Image (cartoon, rainbow, N blue to C red; front, side, top):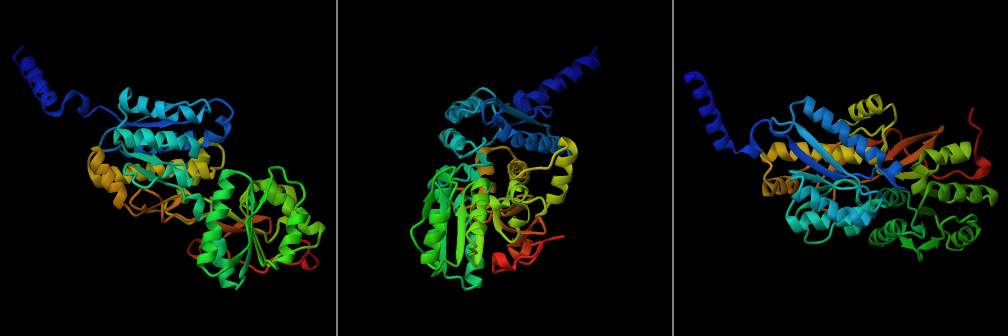
Amino acid sequence: MKRTAMVLAAAVLLVSVLGPARAQGNPVVIGAVVTQSGILADLAADLRKALLLWQEEVNAAGGLLGRRVELRLLDDRSESAAARALYEQLIHEDHADLLIGPFGSAATLGAAAAAEGQRRVLLNATGAARATQRPGFRYVFQVPAPFGNYGSGPLELARRMDYGRILIVARNDPVAREMAEQTQAEATALGLRTATIEIHAPGQNDFAPFIERAKVARAQAWIAYGLPQDAVQMVRDFRRLRYAPAMFVAQGAADAQFVKRLGQDAEHAMGISPWERTLASRGNARFVESYSRKWSAEPTPLAAQGYAAGALIEEAVRRAGSLEQEALREALAALQAETPLGYYQVDRSGAQRAARPVVVQIRNGRREIVWPETLATAKWQLPYPRWEERRVLK
């Protein structure tokens, strides 16, 4: 009896020192809103899979601060307007220690508002639009490269090749327009000449008028923002009209569908990609292997973004040595790191300033990274060949 009483007294003393909510066995709760139903569920599925993979790996390595990580994933049912209320639920009802942002920039706006309002650290895993990282933010930290950075690689290659006349073509949607506008501003700063941005409607099935305007402007580089089907139609019209700019870069050319739909006509086109499975970034090969083994599928850029958010949480907690929000905020604000997604470093508002999308070029039916050169898997080849000069691949 004496021994039992002594053990109980010791247990009471331990709880009184540590507090019941922070006893050693309690998990670290990471909260996120991940679309699991509705029209966006299939698109968002890879974010959830990446977070589950990260949770499994971090727990196998001992968790965070010696405690198991528990993911609390809520479903916004493909309704981005629900994000703010759901993140407030994660904060107040689920008592999440840390937050990871939802799928897409629209939902991230609500998540960021909740995090800032409650002074809770949130890793903006997928929100790449300019609006998701407002001046004055202190608790929201962006993981992916902003949409405004998508023109950096193409413009650098154009500058090196002395292609001083740039045509910018954009699909009529907010993302493509944001990319195009920032590319135009950056081109002007580099001393390159651009005309008014050419905007095309979704489902544009004839780019002949755009080609004529490119000829009149004597454009040397054609840089396009939009979907894979837009890039496919551009190339089909290029071939039909026997037109070839000196450099052709289209965001959609980085998608696997571009090569599938065009075959050999896809050769030599350049695409812009936020992430590639062949990227020689820290831990990327292991991530690709682990994800493929667990889910029997190739990871996507969205998966890489989610996994990178988890990796950054690990590093911030390690450096802060606690889950106290101000300590974590300071750790993330000062952090310079490399994840499978690429480099991470943010400005004072938490906006990403180190990450850059890569430029890929279609070579023998494969996407080869050609910029930045420190991560390249092949040397870029320009000019974009004329149609009569092309050879049939064996």
